[in-house]
Amino acid sequence: MWVEALDLVLQRLLKSGFDFGKIAAVSGSGQQHGSVYWKKGSSAILSSLDSGKPLVDQLGNAFSIKESPIWMDSSTTKQCREIEKAVGGPLELSELTGSRAYERFTGPQIRKIYQSQPEAYNDTERISLKVWSEIALEATAPGLKEKVGKLAPAYDVAGHIASYFVDRYKFNKKCLVVQWSGDNPNSLAGLTLSIPGDLAISLGTSDTVFGIATDPQPRLEGHVLPNPVDTEGYMVMLCYKNGSLTREDIRNHCAEKSWEIFNKFLEQTPPLNDGKIGFYYKDHEILPPLPVGLHRYELQNFKGDSLEGVNEQEVQEFDPASEVRALIEGQFLSMRAHAERFGMPSPPKRIIATGGASANHSILNSVASIFGCDVYTVQRPDSASLGAALRAAHGWLCNKKGSFVPIACLYKDKLEKSAFSCKLSVSAGNHELTSKYALLMKKRMEIENHLVQKLGRW
Ligand code: ADP
Image 1 (cartoon, helix red, strand yellow):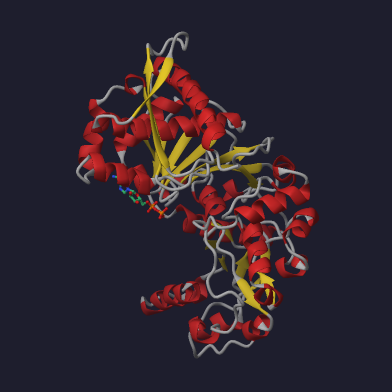
Image 2: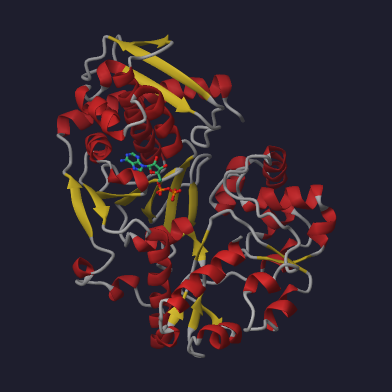
């Protein structure tokens, strides 16, 4: 399917009369955690492609695993625990690689394939990934180092485009291929996040929060990755499984399947929701690690000025309007709390909201009040692929200059007129309300910790 998708994109461009000869460099954005297992002999297939035929007809026999595991997979708990144990514990693994082990991550996925399909693992020539720590490789599967290849900076040129694409699509022979990356790092590039304090919130199928940090502290929650647009600093990221699909679920149950009614409920109910707090996990959640379930609490005596004498009581249900507000406030209070714990600046300098639900102004209103900063939206929704294109230009420029140049050189003072411009959607909420939310957040985290102790999956 992925090979066919690449054929399709290039065919559509060809049919539109696009001049491939003008492309100076390409890069790409892969679906993060979607690992690809090249079979022994696949590099020979790749180096002798027939430009008269589509890729899909020629690569049918190039993969040792026919179905790539993707980020929704949560079947590798056993392998996660084994890897963590082998390196000395979950925190040790996080200090070594930037994250503890998660089911969707490629390491545990590889280990599962090695354990459950040893023949396919042995028949694998190359896994399209970057190099990892020796200790983590050891802990995952034997002989993995040769299969994952060498680490390269994100702006590095991988080589010239293959003759297959030159012959079939008339790409220029000198077109450079700049290292590809995953969708989240590409989004960071595409949203032009470049300074610590810039925070992106992506509200898609999953919800993610990411930003740049100079000195992040790897923890049990969240992930630290190399900064995809700079040689220094890191990208830090939080990832939630219950994003838009869970919001849709509540919308369907409480708001007659209509975002309009959902928004009316948000606007009708007061900020802080009269102390009503909810946890909504339609799927096993990653952050916090809780199983499927709904948990609702009402705070008694909560006025927003102190937590003294404030007690929570578990309740079975809320009225539909309060349910909607509890869902929205809950998600952004959780994001604020975990981002602060992770060492991201608070309040952020600005938030750039992206993904499907960033079209919803009522939701963004809550984001601005809870975080206490301005919220911007981008002109175009496809920040991951835009980011890959921007990184291709960046790699091309670094290559031309013979050394690394900051990516901002490409768009400094020119953002306004480009696809990368963003516009102010909601101004920072009032300071007093943001402080009241800080108290509600504290209480929510207390309850969350209790839930994790009682029901946590690890
Ligand atoms: P993906 O992560 O799959 O790329 P998108 O970023 O395209 O997803 O987001 C799609 C989601 O956006 C849908 O599942 C839908 O629930 C949500 N969405 C679309 N419009 C709105 C809206 N007005 N309010 C809230 N959510 C919305």
